Image 1 (cartoon, rainbow, N blue to C red):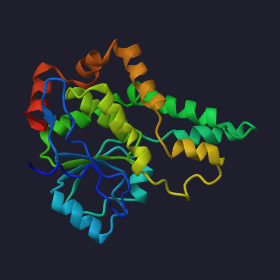
Image 2 (cartoon, one colour; image 1 turned 30 degrees about the vertical axis):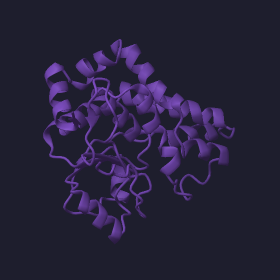
Image 3 (cartoon, rainbow, N blue to C red; image 1 turned 90 degrees about the vertical axis):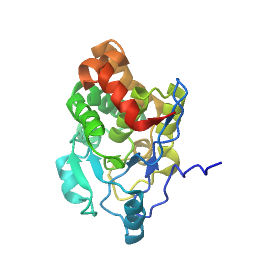
Image 4 (cartoon, rainbow, N blue to C red; image 1 turned 90 degrees about the horizontal axis):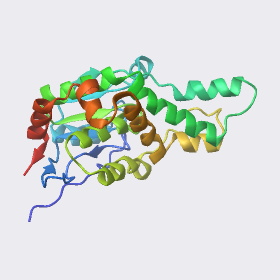
Length: 248
């Protein structure tokens, strides 16, 4: 029996670098290992990290970071082609606006601001996710999908990919929540925010992802409608995606 690859790769400069492979689909197939990775940004990789990522054969990075985020921490691996799919961050600005109104933001504020950001992935940024799937169908794998933390913009992207491939919802939820096990938040980020707010920002919750799928239902009727009309995945594209990233 062949050894199952490690899902999480323990890199010093990228705390949330994980493989999307190995999940079973409803029709009995399996997502291919070592084709699609998800991560936080690739701007702090160490030399040993670079050797690991190079050994994986990663060719492309699909980067959801905004303009300033990309400028502050560009990918350190010149051989990786970076495709920018900018989804500008909104969470910290929204919390600062609450603070500017005269009261400190609460934990409940942070949860709702996070949920609103996920709604925005659907309502304001669907063209970026449409471009993601175009790259999945055109670029040669292995590839890595990331934002700054690799948990929210990336988490929604990976949930969409696994749904499109036919992975059951419970496995998708489990993959999404692995961030809480592996992501290490930068302690210097947003230091003016209350500690309980920073704890919300440094983790993921099912309610966040649910907000995105509620927006999908509201705007597109259901997930199939979103894939067809928002993402541009018809039956032919779904079959092509499955052919690339699933095995019998």
